[in-house]
Amino acid sequence: MNNKLPFIGITLGDVLTRENIFLALSLAGIIFLTLLIFIYLKILAKRGKVSVNFAKLVKYVAIITVSEFIIYFYKDFPPVIKFSKGVEIIAFGIFVKIIVVDIYYLEIIKKKTSKTSHIIADILKFAIIAVFLLYFLRSVFEFNLAAILTPSAILTAIIGLSMQDTIGNLISGLIIQLEKPFEIGDWIEIDSILGEVVEINWRYTKIKNLQDIYIILPNNNLAKDKVINYTKPTPEINQMITIGVSYSASPILVKSAISEVVKSNPNTKLINIFLKEYSDSSIVYEIYYTVKGIGNLRKTKDEIYSGIWYNFKNKGIEIPFPIRTVIMKKEEEGPVINTELINKLKASDIFSEISESVLIDFLSYGLIKEYLENEEVIKEGESGESMFFVLEGKFEAKKHGKNLGILQPGDFFGEMSLLTGDKRYATITAVTKAKAIEIDRQAFKVLLQRERKVIDKVRSVIESRSKGNEANNPTRGSKKTNYAGVFEKFKKIFSIS
Image 1 (cartoon, rainbow, N blue to C red):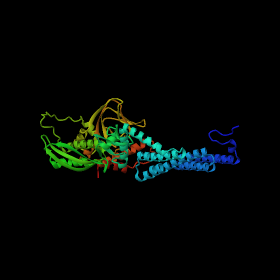
Image 2: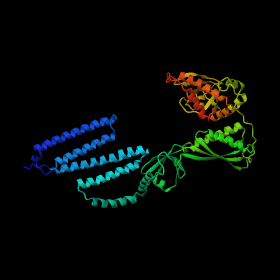
Image 3: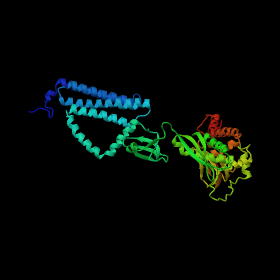
Image 4: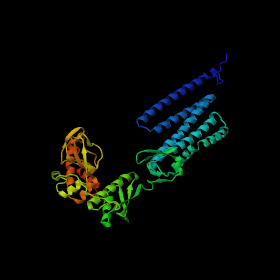
């Protein structure tokens, strides 16, 4: 009877010796102990006691050790040795990958430079896998590498010709990572497309434009076309705007008014103001300033233009119509502001010492809005830069669903957001069909320039309103508001020294 085991070429008696049984039991014990170590390390890694990479290193060191044990004690069984050697090569390759990529590049290098590239990490992984795969084929299966690489080179040439664009994108992605003309978080412009870089991978670069739309740009295009980086070497962007002013206003007055607006904006720094030309209908000025980050460009431009309009209005500087057009200009009708409303406003803390003419001008800068019954005016927790004066009807104030009171003609709300930049404290809803004037922060700046004593009144209002908010906010408990800190926020927003 043939007792030889298939594929191995040895008899069962050769295997079931006392020595082999002892080795098998020893191996089983070692494998069982290794599994226990694996489970224990996994539990420690989940609990944060040891790092995940450390647990992996120990696991693969154990696998390499067991493989060496098998190779040493089972040297008379070639198939077992081949299998163990293959496992050992794979485990050692993963061990090297963890050391080089996961620990050195993605942990140590990232801590030093703050930024790493997943493309570089992929290249390192691919190189390590390629080296150990070739070694695995040569050692375990005794393949002739020259015979493998020759047809592989021909196949690579065929694939390369059919995938030129894809390969070009891959190479361009690698060049971008190595040369770093831009990085994630930078603002770039290519072919009239402006946006923030949010992702760089092998094939494409993803940017997000000012409309929060994602645009996919192939890396090959980025390598060929001109790329403008607005973040490096400095994130500050120079901007120039022009404005035409009446011939009746002196340049020194105009430049002073514009300078006040630009310097009061926290996101801008004034470079210079130039008188550009005398045009048919106006004197044209160029205003140069820097903006902190291109993402603020549109918002800042709006703030500067709006602030200039208010400041010109306050100083009596006219922005004329073109003289080629004949315009029968009527006096603009301001909001209907009756004496009763003015008296109610003067009864409030902020406006008590302001003259009636200044109050009328202040309210004339506002925008009259009409609201339907149950229409929401402002919402609790939202950002806001304006306050409201009730002209007609009634409004209801609620916080966390709790009714705080009814606002009637002469009352105002939203002033804390305007003054300090805080989120809206309560939700305001029209109880009936109502009307209110909305005043923004630029208009309030004009009021502060004309009536400096309003600053002391604002301090009192902030303290009073903060105490009221503290009493109505159940989440604050006994915590006291830092009124001085809130007032400092007001001074910073309005550039008050």
